Amino acid sequence: MPPSTRESLPRRAGELATRATGRMEAEHQWFRELGAADRSWVGLVAQAGISALLDWYADGARTDPPGQVFAAAPPSLAGTITLAQTLDLARTAIATVEDAVPELVTAQEAPALREAVLRYARDIAFAAAELYARSADHRGGWDTRLETLVVHAVVRGEANDAMASRAAELGWEGVSDVAVVAGVLPAGDPTPVVAELRAAAGALGLRCLAAGHDRRLVCVLGGTADPAADALRLVDSFGQGPVVVGPRVPHLFAAGRSARAALSGVDAAPAWTGAPRPVAADELLPERALLGEGPARRVLVDRVYAPLRDHPSALLDTVQAYLDQGMVLEATARLLFLHPNTVRYRLRRVGEVVGLDPHTARDAWVLQVALALGRMGSGPRLWRGGR
Image 1: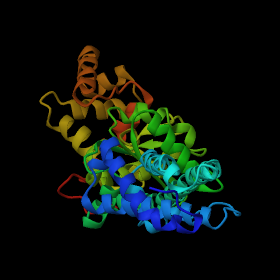
Image 2: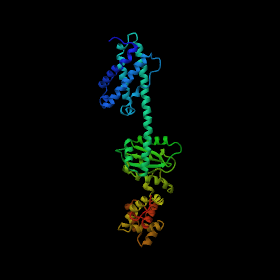
Image 3: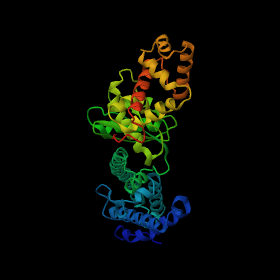
Image 4: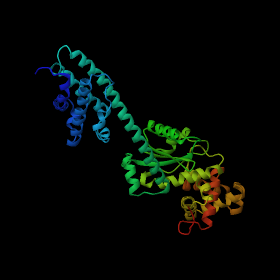
């Protein structure tokens, strides 16, 4: 085929695009695995790129190469093929034009066309990088909004279809072992704080949804086997003040319970001056009960008061007397007409039954509050308060 003149070059674009598409088919498995619609779009992008190159060269290549090569593609295509695959497409299209140089122009003009192709290839690479950067920024902004909506839904306990749809878009459909960690939101712009927390959780191999909520920083962790240990490694991302870990739940749609416990714990933690950071929400049950939280009251009664009340060894009366006597063993024994060793045995049984040691100040405080709530009749069937 005799070499073409510059003016006739644009008419060869369709033919060269067909060649490039065939070459893509032969050389790239990812292209063969695309659906028909996406393959068609890739072909149109290849044709647009080759046509723009030939038009630009035919016009004298006096300006910078055109940068609108990807305008023919729908925005969704950037989510279908990766940047590396897009560069494969560009390389294949450019290589097709390079191979056809002898049939496109005379031998004297071939070096000029090859130089123009190199300039064009460079600009194509920059245009592809810019396209994917914009797409990533757009997606990142959209994901951040979705993430905030999901976190706020968790805090409000809204386990509905809207939350399910948003969580699915964020890849949380199959995430299990979820816990909520709450603390104080650092001053200033929350965006970098949330990004830092998300990155730190990702480095631990955890899924993370994070957002600011009413001066609180709320983090929903997914895939956590030990929420307390994981929270300890994330604690530096939170502002000064308590960091509270809610109980682990099976999945995101049960995370409202964990969030309520964590946020209530943040409010209650200042009452325990020796509270660790982070602290489990269940360690703050007495303080949360003082805030009027119904679930905390019920848990204390169910876990502490009821087992002692129902035990055959009069553990409830013994530990109550011990607390009333200022934690003095001999005074308790005299009050109950028991041998001190009997009191020791019963107090040891208290620790075995409810996991609290009456001899330590903190556990004695938990027992005191639980017994008071139980004696007030604030059990699961009678309590009507709470939040």
